[in-house]
Image (cartoon, rainbow, N blue to C red; front, side, top):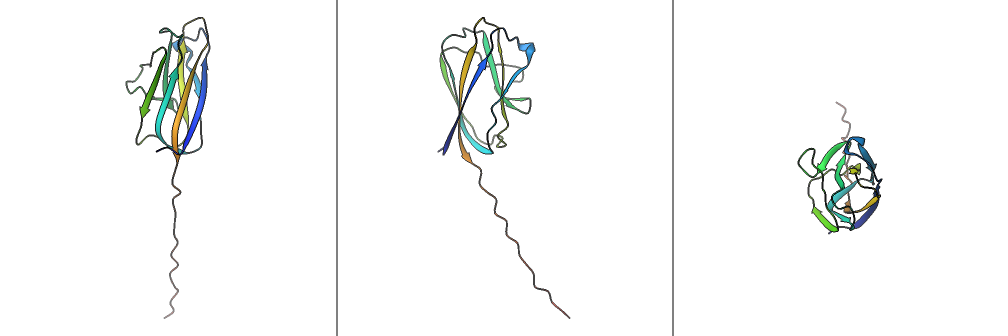
Length: 126
């Protein structure tokens, strides 16, 4: 179960073509991602598409070059073994005449702090 919720509002300007490479950083501290929830309010009518990724690379959806296109939907992506760097991004387009906002929630846990121990060997003299 997630210990934190990180929420981002991403507004995609009207008239943004796919070729514009519109990218919004949704960076957070280093975290383990349990789930991503995305709320797409009513209105886009097939004119908005988006991807979730990191460092310029698409992660969701899995098929390279495809976009999620929806209207009036809440999408839940339970995840395991995803990046934990916190360097998330949204890539999107909006061919319509109105701005549209996506509401993105990351359900996350802090990463475990790796504990290191140092063993000191005694110095022996011969």
